[in-house]
Image 1 (spheres, rainbow, N blue to C red):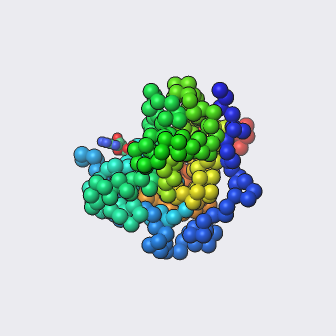
Image 2 (image 1 turned 60 degrees about the vertical axis):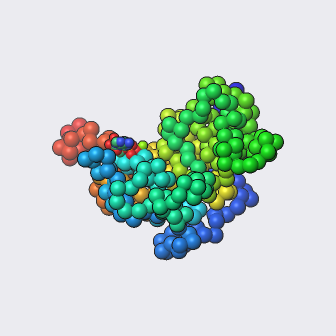
Image 3 (image 1 turned 90 degrees about the vertical axis):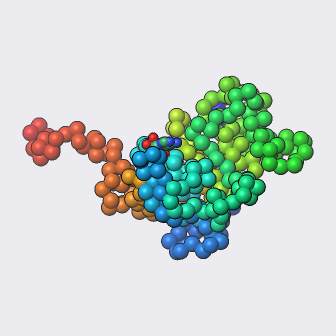
Length: 299
Ligand SMILES: Nc1ncnc2c1ncn2[C@@H]1O[C@H](COP(=O)(O)OP(=O)(O)O)[C@@H](O)[C@H]1O
Ligand SMILES: [Mg+2]
């Protein structure tokens, strides 16, 4: 069983004939117009999250529009995963609010909460597949839990989703029999089982080689474009981030320190953001003390 990059159903750049970006999101023209209510999928207002004495998120204001891919960046431990968990209703905020599809999860009764949960999918770093189930059974799980579809229909849907991520031939394999990249793709097939409108990704490319990283990035972009999925991607992989993002935010010390389109983040004046984006370059120049550079070669 190979982890063949060619085997993926269409990755970036978009295939000829692929649908254009959804009309509700046009990065070139509307990204900075105030979003209308109909366009807003996720919104936080002054979101504060503490663990004990520690304030991890300290007043986050975010608006995510339908069809866009928002990348959340920041140093390790700065609260990216915590923010994601707050957004999808896994952590209650200590202060402020989080609205998903216009609804505050924590004001809902369990059946309404379930209805909201069905509208989004998650691909988490630790979102391990159930090891005793085949890849196909893992993908079928949400369909069995949340729909009344017949077994035949579920079987068909599983095949369609696996085909989308290029894993059709892995259906009967166990998680222990597939590579890390295939496991991420299987997790993605499971995340899209219910045709979500919104996908949360937490470090979707961590631990993958550059080729598989490119494939996962391509799938993220493809799902956004072809299925009009709104995507929120947490990553510390800068290359991936700049590849998939329509818009980016950078977190530091519990706050959003920069927000904008990729080119704006690249040229952002905030010192932390500059260091974060240009870290590796500065690290290289830092090898040479300034006095040595002033003297020139051999000086
Ligand atoms: N459930 C939790 N209980 C206590 N502390 C937590 C919990 N989850 C995260 N933290 C702490 O919150 C901070 C941010 O963590 P996290 O959101 O995982 O960061 P990131 O994803 O940016 O690496 C860390 O200091 C972490 O130890
Ligand atoms: Mg994390």
